[in-house]
Image (tube, rainbow, N blue to C red; front, side, top):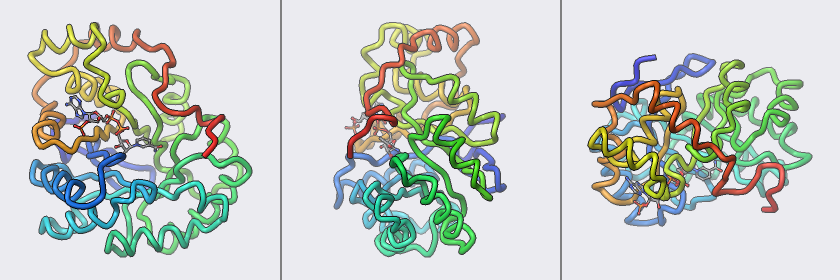
Length: 277
Ligand code: NDP
């Protein structure tokens, strides 16, 4: 797959295209910081923004997209249904709230944020209705393990387009990646920079030096070369630019293997089978 610019896109299982590289916005404070950082990203050529009801910045992201002057259809916007709305089965109402805040009539991708026990299968049926109404151009899941996806597939008439999961050199979850990719479910990484700690890994620092790139750029490049959608978050202009400057170098098969070998199943976030929120 050719991934050589910020507009290079994955093709989802329904034909919708999703840029391989986007801007993450978890812990991006609502208000002017969210608006400004999203604006910098769009100016730099990013065409994919990842938000969630839980992040409380949808209103700012929506405003930035609108004020950028970029046609709405050229920016891929993801938001997510939070667990409380999954527990209450108010997935559709939650999307309506998100759309109102975003100031949009649809999102490009709507995700179930976590596999809330006893609820996620029923929630998926609501997601399918949302999809059929056109309020989301694609629907998917997040933090789903293989067994969660299998439960959904038993009843699904629409296969999830995406699974967004914690994924980085220390937590590669290869069986889950293989499962998703074999089912045509695009694999998307959250915490691709290990929440800012990627520069603490000597092997990655060494590879970065060899390419005159930063550890963050190497981690992003590694993900793209694995056909994984990457959504690094930053609120700093220089880092937003840095994280997008990953199309002028390539990791060798040996470098890819050296980074693959760092995997220790070490998460920065909760285990999707054990979360308590
Ligand atoms: P990331 O791995 O993207 O790391 C973000 C951290 O790295 C921030 O502290 C940022 O600081 C720092 N950073 C950014 N760029 C650089 C750089 N070039 N060099 C050094 N440090 C850097 O973690 P996230 O948890 O934010 O994950 C990415 C996105 O995934 C989220 O923002 C969110 O959109 C999504 N996500 C989804 C989850 C889910 O459950 N579905 C859970 C968590 C995240 P600064 O901003 O100061 O630059």
